[in-house]
Length: 392
Image (cartoon, rainbow, N blue to C red; front, side, top):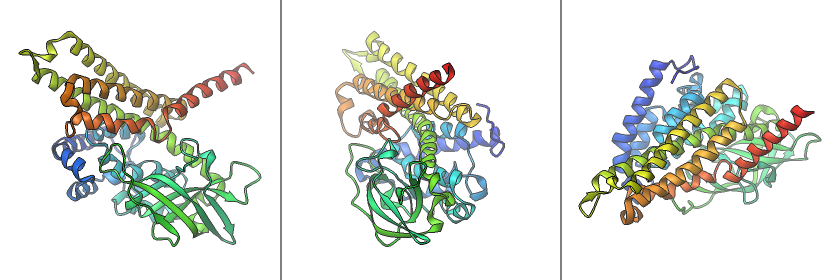
């Protein structure tokens, strides 16, 4: 595809994609069972990802990243999505929802302080938004940041925070006290992991995505200076959250396409290699129909992701299109994964068979960075509001 990013021209970007594909398929895919069994990414794969610049591929070049725009990001994401999703999760918050808050809303001093380490993989940044009563909708936040002179005191708790056990920096969302006269009173703070009063809980035990580490994070009288306030302005918070989440939804949609492609490839291989009564199962029309449905979903999802990414980069749609892409692609990959298990028959239900892992892993894609239900509200509500505005 043709890129609009002058920082990474097409020929250079083609080489980036080729290197990522080689890394994923040659180095990571053969070790998926190891990742599943140990529930962690092997250290040498982590180091290889750092050496390739994957911890900062979406961070601008001025801070040491590769500087990929979202149109390029989704091409990389579709390659990363071909293997265990925990690999991408290892550096996903650096490039995505956490890193983008700093890139787009941080002060110059904050950017210079943190982004070089984030881009190099020396610092893992976690996006601390989700709480028991607030996830897809940040308006329900209960974590509070109370002004105390030129400092802030943060109290509250977060849950399901990706990379929390490994984080060096938490991008923390909190309600300000006292509340402002205007706006929703949500601010964002940069809190180093070693700050007094910050505690990370035990690693969560999850349905899938083994190797991806999430945990609760609590803040007990955590004191930070005025320089910790993202953008130097408490009013920046909610906009930072919504913008970062919307961009992230296009990325998640691309990951879903990558996983769907892998499930399809496994299904085709199974249909050719497995036999029933001496006949390859791929010769049966009902199996062919399942593969046809998978292929249709993959192709439609890939086209939709690219279209949504282009709309984001061009600035023509940064709200409806990201939600449409995430809704369709994450629901699509669930159907494709289910069909992959069906094509495999009983073997598809066995642990360590790729489609069994994919079936479990992709279920999370419909939940984080905005559930499918939230996406439907954004899409439907946005279209209705636009129609009302036009009518008036």
